[in-house]
Amino acid sequence: MSSKHRLTRSFRTLSVLLYLLNMAVSIHFTLKPLYLDCLVGALITLVCIVMLCVAIEAPSPIVSRLERSAIGSSLFTFRGRYMVDLLIALFLFAMGFWGILMGFFTLFLIFGIRFLGVKQPDAFNEIFRQTDIESQSHGDSYTLEDTYDTEGSGVHR
Image (cartoon, rainbow, N blue to C red; front, side, top):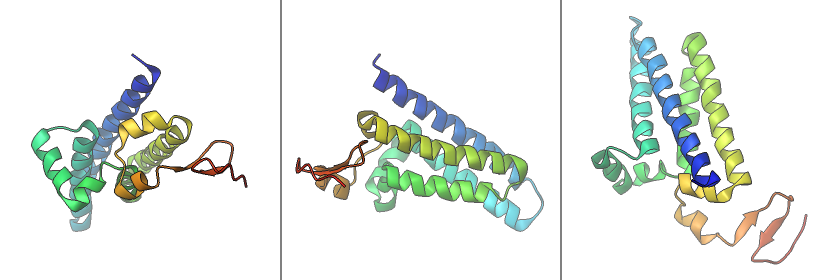
């Protein structure tokens, strides 16, 4: 198995573990007898279940339904996942010590995956789908040398 596949499998496994732990914290928060605690905990649990399905791309009826919807299809891109994970992390910060801890882990994973995209773009593209805008501007890319290369123009900052 190549290092790219090992790396993507590791990030997928970490994502699954993170969503399961986030669900455990949210369910624990839901058990408090306050209306808003129950509501927020239930909503974050539901969002974590959806993101767990996106991360493992199963079960196929849920994944295919998400892919056909306008909002659901964006969850398979980095931008969509980043926004949902950020929302999850923000709500986790309100859930006591374990929520704060899991919120930091969620943010750490988001930035770790982005770092993967800079260091190993092939592995990043294997984890996430490209949006139409990203696929149209495929010729424009940032490189590690802090240059911006537009179709080989060689323009340096």
